[in-house]
Image (cartoon, rainbow, N blue to C red):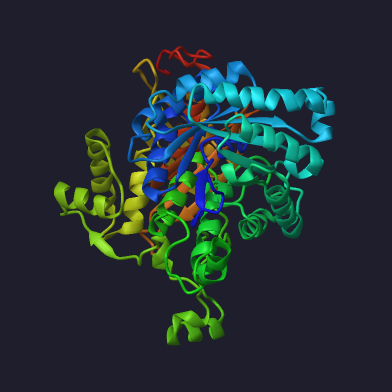
Length: 536
């Protein structure tokens, strides 16, 4: 197998490394929703999780393998340490996939060997090929990573890689595990591997990197110039610490600057053939979906998908863009699926028109999801004269999050003003089916709502983030609320959208509490005894 493929393979690890972001924990159904979106996006490989880590991860990988890992779909990959237990568990989880891949790894840097593995170089030289061969006995497609490769002795790294390929590894991934390297150093490392590993032509060279110094994307692009042909990345760049290399930035850099990168892949400089299989028009909606489900907001000035990425406030810039877009825009907003705020539906629109427009926007909903979303659409349409595509996206993303509805918000009512004490009354339906009502006073209406909800749910938690974003312009705009709360050192996120920002805030909070409650009581039993009789 030659590592001189004529295109770049996109390996998405949003569901594995991305989910390791603090507060980004996803349930099985949410992972499946994102996996479907990644398949529509056109990624080549989905790293669905680390099956040995937990029963939940095993179930998620197995479900993604079964429902997304079809013959026409992407390769489904599972991570495993270089141990038989990890590898066997990964193989079993991947069994339903038409194209399974096991990704096994072991550290190769001296600092990891001494302090983490407590093993010698000689031991690692034996373990790596042995475990690659074991993985190969389960699946044909095996990827091997020498963890912390950037800080490893190059000569030792060459030996480990050579043995891993000889044992059956078809992809060799070079990780910048701690986000330490720079573009020139990373390019030289990839070039050194190509020049010093005798059998490297039998494997694809892949790269994985973190963004601790803000250099991950730049490092990857330099790696491409030196022979890397697979890029391991995440939507919105989420991941541990400062995150991973961002998929949307890599794909659009290769798209916008393809004439520059073409020669490095053996193509004519003027070739217009895309360098990846990614459907760029799916980028924006996939970014929004991941942001909403993880509760991790995209900063406004984020490249490609930030709300300001295609905005111009400077008078000089505005004048230039009006005269010709290319004066200040190097790519068209529509190329990432960011359409104009076109009005498409209203309160008299029927179910068929609603379903048709959702398909046009790229949403594939089950019958139950469609029913729920249509009810939510009608509620919004009664409050807003015109419904935009962005409103529809907010409604759908709000409806498909699949959070277990243990507590259901039935009523929220607030009273506030500059000379009044903010007061809120809420009614919640409990997991046992009872309706409980309580009230509280707060520093503001949202604070009062949250205190009233806490009096019913009775699960201690700390609100650590509260953010509000307008979906569209205008006084009747829908507002999206994202919150994050902490309980026993774990973080849970919630998201909701509504034309009434107080209602959205309440629903987002209940959303997060349901995640928390579900995690504490997977069997459905109460982790702490909320009130089981109505307040007098």
